Image 1 (tube, rainbow, N blue to C red):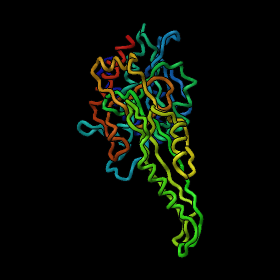
Image 2 (cartoon, rainbow, N blue to C red; image 1 turned 120 degrees about the horizontal axis):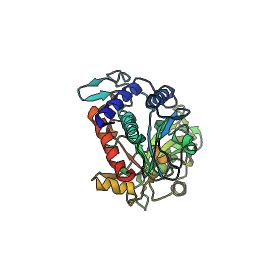
Image 3 (cartoon, one colour; image 1 turned 180 degrees about the vertical axis):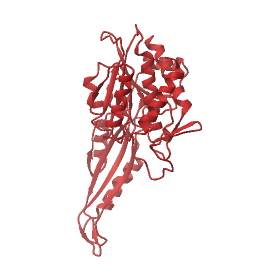
Length: 354
């Protein structure tokens, strides 16, 4: 199948996906579209929940396997949309719609790439395509839920909008729920311990602290206080102040080490929401990275988190589209980015699977 035909199929599929709302945990409609797409092309697929996957025709368990993975869930449209987020209109050189850029464009480009390799014999790698759910909420019903059902995966390409640059490493994420404790009292009298003031001391530490070890690929760990709540009435000194810290972690420390350092420095009670979203990446000498460098592709460390954090094998993140457009009003992807994405994926995989 020629690239022009693959691109047309991909754009048509992307329009179908955009027209079908697929908010996280509500992706049943788009999962069915993907199942039907594979069926129409005589490709057997499997489904668990809202996750759909398929393997190349000449799959050989004796060979290593490369996973092509992207997600078909979306965030909800924000209030600043001026267009119908589900219309999937092509206007000029842009395809508009919720999820067009994040991550519909990368997903359909990977599906087209999978079609390209599907019937090829004597590949050095098996090729598995997985379209997964709940990425936008880092939910447990996504890639994690089918990992044990997939063949053994040796390396993965995660489709996200990166302008087709190659993220060879990605920061992980640890969200901390924190409680600074004080003692209730009347605001008019010198009594009580104001939990807000106690929290401020710890918040200032989060703002200023720099972890000594800095990752060569991902840079420093970044901590941001993003939510705070305390008090119920103006004349009562609050006994508790609740706040949330977003911690973008690197491979310089384990999540457990980071948590221990934080607990040593602050008085607040710290509770991590999860320890699942760990930093991820791939060795610089991996054949996939060497292939990207041979093709003069830009390689970098990504500050954002994706399903790459939940894939326990070497992986890269790349795809058509621009991360800056993700979750924005009137989201779009350039039509020619789909074709470029397919070409780039195929060129990269040609270097290791042929």
